[in-house]
Amino acid sequence: MNSTIQLYDATLRDGMGGGGMSLTAQEKLRVVERLDALGIDMIEAGFPSSNPKEAELFELLAAAPLSTAVIVAFGMTRRRGVSAENDEGLNVLAASIAPAVTLVGKSSPLHVEKVVRVSREENLEMIAGSVAFIAGAGKRALFDAEHFFDGWREDSQYALETLQAAIDAGAERVVLCDTNGGSMPSQITETVLAVREALPNALIGIHTHDDGGCAVANSLVAIEAGATQVQGTLNGIGERTGNANLVTINADLQLKRGIEGLAAENLARLTETAHFLDELLNRAPNPAQPYVGKNAFAHKAGMHAAGVSADPGTFEHIDPSLVGNRSEVIVSELAGRATIAEKGSLAGLDLDAAVSARIVDKVKELEHAGYQFEAADGSFELLMRRESGSYEPLFRLESWSVTVEQSADGAVASEATIVIWLGDQRYERRATGNGPVNALDSALRSAIVEVHPEVADVELVNYKVRILDESHGTDAVTRVLIDASDGERVWGTIGVGENVIAASWQALVDSLEFIHQPALDKKDGQP
Ligand SMILES: [Zn+2]
Image (cartoon, rainbow, N blue to C red; front, side):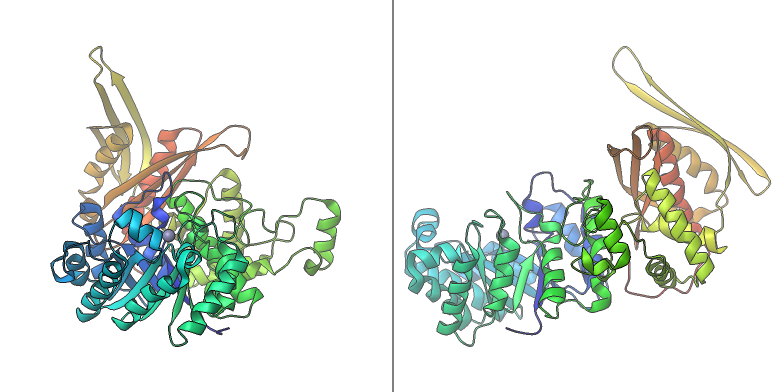
């Protein structure tokens, strides 16, 4: 068993196959930045096609300063009856900005004959020719052996030949895929051991799906059997029942098996990174998710709670702070403060112990009211600034109002009026918009740009509303998340309230105030 493992994230490609999974190019960039900060080695970004959304993502990635992660483009081996040189998809991959390419090809004779309908020999040529073409274009080539474990059970000799074809053609690694997700751990162990014996010099990766409920277990046993790369997605999102959950795998590898994947200080970012993705997907994080769920270290029963207070080892399998989570019983004030102080220093703020403690209290209070700052980095920075005295308000509000009117022909018109103060000057502005929030935004900006022209560059790229069904008080509340961008950075802001327009107003104001704040000496590389 290897002591270090290469971590390969497929959230943005395979993960997006799940129902209701959709992210904009800007949001995908934010995910890439988080994965990079976490210390993930390789990030699969998808196929760099002419589809405008994918094309935009690869353009953004070309300009993104990543510290360690390698961007991987993903595509298929050549189509049948066409040479690799003349295959359109392969040419797109060869020309992409990604330094590495994962090519998926068939390893199961059943699929070769029934699905692709080519001879076994042509399939081997499709793999070899495609890998050679990509490697010849100067890319690091990885071969995803699709349906490998099913193929192995049908004809292990042929399944091996597909791997050998890829390796001979220049693939740096072959990835064994349990595409149907139905293999059991003992089958995975047996197969990986046999492949290693047959191909002792090959670098092996493992890619599993959770149809049999064993994706994480299958990944772990494959690593024990000699795989040195593990592929998965954040929170296990993906088609059907999902992919292997890379969050759980990371914690298991590090804390249970002593295998180095993430740096220890990055492991403590797991919880916030997992929640960040759920917030972007506009879904509630699973409270029962291993390691990072809200209930993962919650102790309800009196005896458990008493035991944990006396010695956390009695009812907790690990110290929750190792993965950035916390016990619901003993909230570690010290750990909380240290995390805040670190976040402050990343933003360029020097927070002393008293200020950090105040921020911890404030965050707890706001979380109780329905706020979540994982995807609202902009609002969180403003909060830290307010508590530490480095906050500069953009304007003073006197009042705002919105009317929404529907006429008999069905047309809906929104109009907003705002009254604000900039210095000792009073501004009253009215604007229409294609919705109440858009009208408020227009009215507010038309006043502010006269004094602060920089707010004209802020674009609201995303607006999301969620009704919180958990009872945070007496009534249901609405949470609004806005992503804003100035063309270089993207920041998230949040508003919460019983009224959706009022919650939107908070998030809107934060998105403009964020860019107005006095510059600080920011540290690079951390979102
Ligand atoms: Zn897959």
